[in-house]
Image 1 (cartoon, one colour):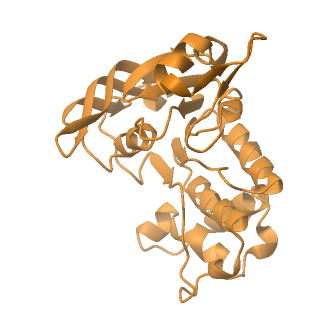
Image 2: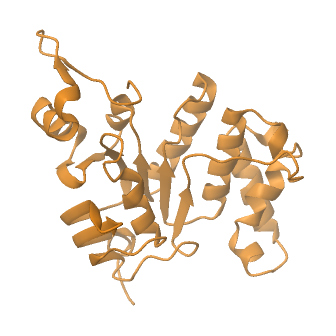
Length: 255
């Protein structure tokens, strides 16, 4: 299939309806996610993680299509997905370097890692500030360190589309800043970066925002989407007008 880079990278969603237990949990008439940083926001249970699952190909919709460059999504080829929480068993004897290397295409095909593969592992460990932890076991790391290792694993795949679910939630400032820097670098490289987040300040950094509450409430630039009328539709009674032209959104996570 001959396509331009933009056509190859875009995620096209049309007439989407995803259900769980017979109830719709995500409905999107039509939207295109292009290269750059797209933040997905909405209250708890609004469909943020479900959207990432659909784009990754982990779940199939009841109706509608999701296409990446005109083809159905498939995790591990064009798409890397870093889940919201990662728990390392204390009995799992695996180092940060091993975790990152295992996700590379050569390892998935049971091939010996090339010099380029090894350099890529070193590069992403350095980018996320965990190069000095390369030989430390995952279970011996803090939550922030562990999250950075898993994001490094996602980046090491060199996928065209990177999906991150709450990548900075509950992390220390240093870890959050390093992860934000990594997101910016991937955006600047021309990849599609989709981040589900409760943090509206984080969403304001994005190129584009999708606001959900089962349905797609709004899509566009942060300045167009993160406005009172959309926030009230998405968050309903949890939006407080402070009377000075500003508003506060108090969701279940108090962001």
